[in-house]
Amino acid sequence: MLVCSCNIISDREIRQAITVLLREDPWRLIVPLQVYHAMKKRGKCCGCFPQLVDLIIETTQAFHRELDTPDCEIVSFLDRLRDRHRECETARLIARKRMEKIRAA
Ligand code: FES
Image (cartoon, rainbow, N blue to C red; front, side, top):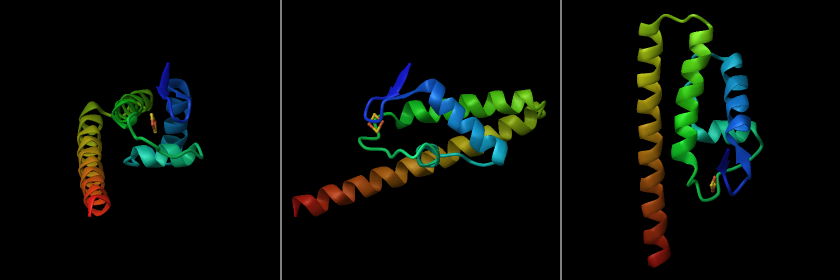
C-alpha cells in the first residue's frame, strides 16, 4: 500500500526501514524524519506523517513481541513513543505557523 505519494514509498518499505533502525537500537524512539533519513528520502508535504507514526508504533510493538519483551515494558515504551510523536508534531505545527507569519509579512 502506498503511504507517501510524494516519495512513492510503500508501507512495506517503511516497515523494513523501521525494523533496521530497531535492530540497531530496540529502545530508540523513532520519529518520521529518522525513517525517511534512513531511506535517503525527505518529507515534502508531510501529509503521510500521521500514517507513518502509526506504522512506527505497530512495527515497534511487533518487533518487541518477537523479542519476547515483557508486555509492561512494551506498553511503557509505546507510551513514551506516542509522547515523543506528539512533541514532534507540536514543534512541526509551531514552525509551520511561524513560516506562514514570515511569508505573510
Ligand atoms: S505524502 Fe509523504 S511527504 Fe508528501
